[in-house]
Length: 218
Image (cartoon, rainbow, N blue to C red):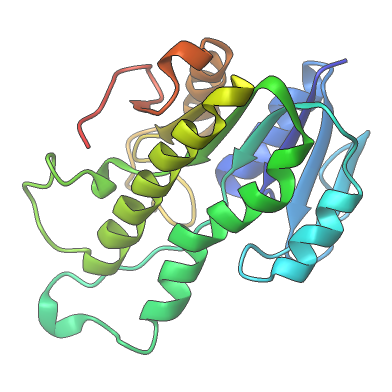
């Protein structure tokens, strides 16, 4: 039975990942910041926050060795549309959650991923410097750009273990973060993302891809 750890599974895309893989017969471990108890039969719920290393280490201790897939999904939104509206007090939390947090989770849980396994992080096309033609959203863009750089670097570090690492853009999805006006349904996004994940290889590790499998510019 293949196995997956979904970091950040309480709602939205993370919760849909849990549902998808559980229905497909995978052994699923899912982290949430507060106990939910409603992630589905057979799903092992773990309490962890990507900004709390002790909780990540505790979660990792409950995960068996040689898991197949680690999905780093936890993140927060930020909507400063111009320089004047940047909230300096909120900056450390945004960067800690979106940029450093996934790497801390990878540090804690990565050793549990089998050689030849897969690690992916959910990012955004808003983290692409080359594709930034609209401006705004300073903190969110910068946190995701930092995440992209970190995951690209992790891909290089894990080459020796032949672990496929990718950064994935789920589309503009109808979640609490994306809003009701978003273009993509959660189920459609995750269906595409899981197909992309299934096709990842160690040889192409370090890619930035959208949920349709298209390569995106850094």
